[in-house]
Amino acid sequence: MLTACNLRFGYDETHVVDGISLSLTPGEILGLGGTSGSGKSTLGRLLAGRLRPKAGSVCLDDAPLRPVASGRPAPVQYAPQNAELAVDPRWKVKRILANGGTPDEEAVTALGISSAWLNRHPCELSGGELARVSLARLFHPGLRVLICDEVTAQLDALEQKGLLDRLSALARKRAIGLLLISHSRGLRDQYCDHAATLEDGRLAAEA
View 1: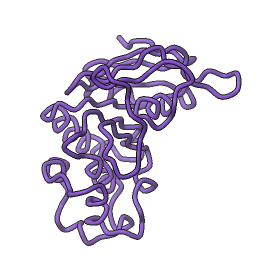
View 2 (view 1 turned 120 degrees about the horizontal axis):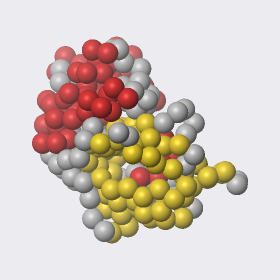
View 3 (view 1 turned 90 degrees about the horizontal axis):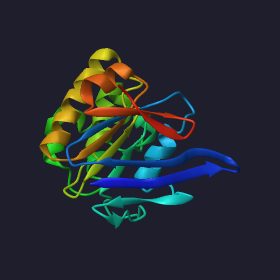
View 4 (view 1 turned 60 degrees about the vertical axis):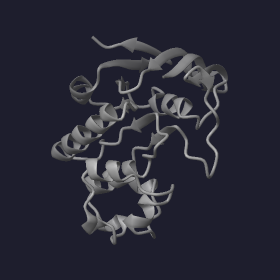
């Protein structure tokens, strides 16, 4: 289980995250909403160990979350909004999938990645196809939590549904906690077990 206790983070005198506590259990899907600039991405990066909090802690199974280190697959992965910025445009898909080690074949299959894409470059894929590839490369045997930061924001409604149907089913099957950051209340209602909204650095539960 991923837990955050009294997290605080800010710039100068401004608190972007102000005393947030939450938990994410295996296989649970938690939604996070809020206006642009409310700190959703900052909170996601704190939970993934990409940022160090000014105060408070993030733990995985009651042990402090270790900082992200090169060459060591992290148990908590962060997927940014723009998939094209998360992959090397010079690499073909098969190299992207193998960048962190042997590709996770279950994830590759579950996310609907076609073998026909393997010899293509990112620019030769649609937005939905590239989003699936970018997510599949984050899966590994030790993955415990996946933080998705507006990963469907640039997709049309059909691509959003196709991606989230597959991703949510895979996360539940493998007991991976999933934090779904999304502006869309509709998507949060449809895919999340429960959701919260970030405002003024604090969380408020959604009805």
